[in-house]
Structure formats: C-alpha cells, structure tokens
Image (cartoon, rainbow, N blue to C red):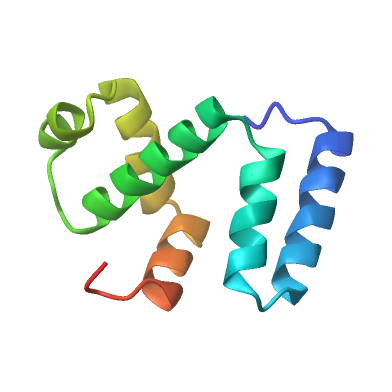
Amino acid sequence: MNSNTSEEIKAIDQIAGILAKIEDRKLIRDFLICILTKFEIKEIAGRWELVKLLNKGMSQRKIAEALRMSLCKITRGSKELKKRDSAFKMVLDGYVENDE
C-alpha cells in the first residue's frame, strides 16, 4: 500500500516532468545533490545498487553482505522488480547499459 499523500505524488510528478525535459546530465546531478540530503543520497544510491545487483541475479543474502543492508530492504526491491509493469525493470532494461 502506498502511503504517499496526493500532494507528495503531485510534487514528485512535477519534478519528474522537469527532469524528463532536461538533457544536461550534470545539471540533473547537481539538482539532485542540491535537493537531497547526504543521507538521502546515500540511501538512494544504495537502493539503486541493490536493484542492479538483484537484476543481475545476485542472491539477497550476498547483496545484504556486500552492501551492508537489511534483508527487509532488499526483499522490498526484489518484490518491486517482480511486479507486473515494474518501473525498476523498465528502467533497468531500457536505460541501463550492461557494463555499469
């Protein structure tokens, strides 16, 4: 169940629309660094790494060990990847190069 409010979703939708228009990778990176705290950046980077590792077939236990992350968080990522029309899967399959 999604616990985000309609105002939060509206704000995320607005940010997504803006980022979709920007073709300057450095500007997007700088914007994200400005808008997120160091902790939020660390969390997002960790979640991104775990999703990429799950997608490559690494076991949840190995990911937990490698990233020093809870199995609960990894299981959530795994469930998101397995969902029909998973945004994680679409992004990984459509935009991530295999050598990353």
